Length: 85
Image 1 (cartoon, helix red, strand yellow):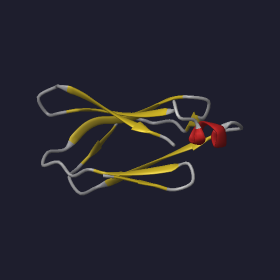
Image 2 (tube, one colour; image 1 turned 120 degrees about the vertical axis):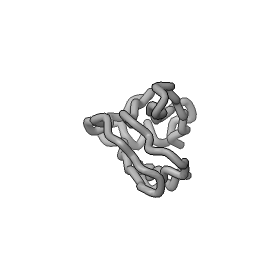
Image 3 (cartoon, helix red, strand yellow; image 1 turned 90 degrees about the vertical axis):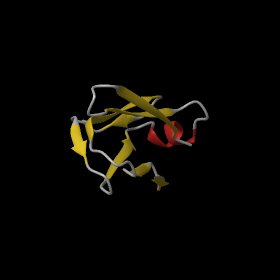
Image 4 (cartoon, rainbow, N blue to C red; image 1 turned 30 degrees about the vertical axis):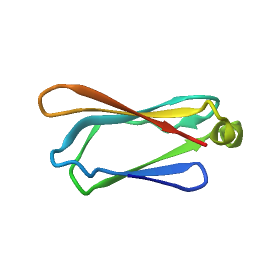
């Protein structure tokens, strides 16, 4: 589940197992704060904010994409693309 605010996206982990090495990447003109890998347990939420001089245009751009990356406990890496607009 993703909730959006002004340049902020909050993700709630609704899976049944912890997500390992969770991190974000951004394709677009904005800047993300350092996204260190972390473990997110079921029911926990994480938040990411797009910042920078061009953050407003990045948030409004139709081609801007935030990518949530994590590993399952068996080592499989998963990617979830999230449109920023």
